[in-house]
Image (tube, rainbow, N blue to C red; front, side, top):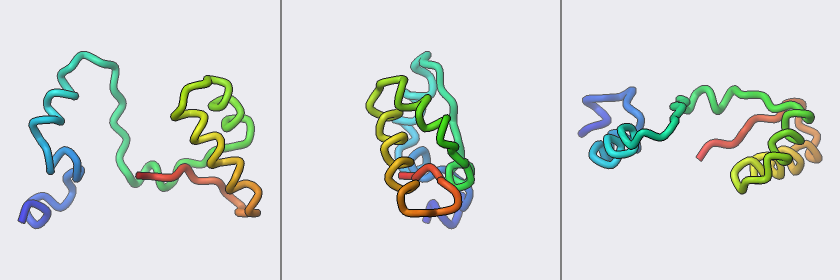
Length: 82
């Protein structure tokens, strides 16, 4: 029913608004990025290497994913979305 009422709502926020409110008001630096942006973001080779150099698990996973898909011969590299 919620999807019919709010078709453009972000699913996780819609599904657990209380948890979203806690996270959004926790005081952490946040950047919310809509899903359609993640499906269009291009990642270049030097950017993938910069991500890997940061050394945290998320950026290392993104860089590794880029390397694997680069070997597939795809003309563009798009970051995966959850």
